[in-house]
Image (cartoon, rainbow, N blue to C red):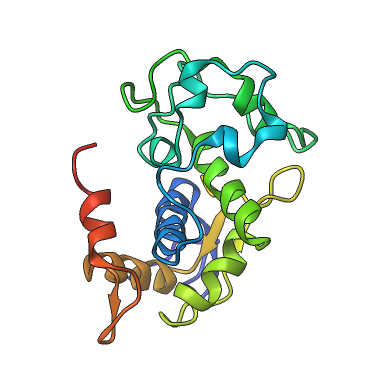
Length: 197
């Protein structure tokens, strides 16, 4: 263990893309509980944000494609503007050039969309949803996630954790969703998440 100044062992530190793994497992919990399905389509979840005449590729884009960073975009949208509350609509209007699942593009905005989907389906923020399911059972502290314009927590970045929080989460993943003898998230989720997509 170690912490470099100005940080300290007990001080939460923004983890940027490590946050994506936290968001991915949140979706795993939502699937396990029947809140959503990997087959749910973006146009059905956000019909008001979709173009009037969505392309076939957009119509075929599912939650699973966001998880694998294969939604079909050729370029990622600019999502960091703190004044841009319309980023979900911009994501939906960005051309879906490729058939979903056929083209990889590292896409932080796509993981932010997973956070938005969770909030739309549950009425809770990403961290509120995870608190009783993972943060409390694992003995993690209060986890903060930076909100985007409009109040949706990032999901693709923005989580602040201590080193101990990170270690507990990594052990949870290594245990394939088990913690102190309790299977919190089914092992099949981790097997699918770490397989070739």
